[in-house]
Length: 134
Image (cartoon, one colour):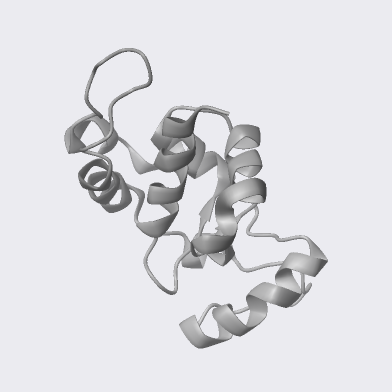
């Protein structure tokens, strides 16, 4: 897998503030890839970042991941829905415009693999937040 993509995804996750979550699709739109690629990065390299802040589009986590995430969620004030499958993402989703700006600063030193171009400016990710909500 592209090392720059891995680093972009991990840095994006690190920008999600405590008590907030994003979906795989939110991160995919932010870094310019697909949700499955974000999932692959998280599966292989996500253990060192705040992985419990990344959920499905509905705020769900697999049962085994939710069990491991619960202590983090409890500490950060993220409540589990009554169905026990995840959090109400509409309540806990990070401000995606702010996340985009924070992300742009966090990856400013990375170059796109093979292209020699710099990472996008913050305004490139400060578009309509609803477009990121997948």
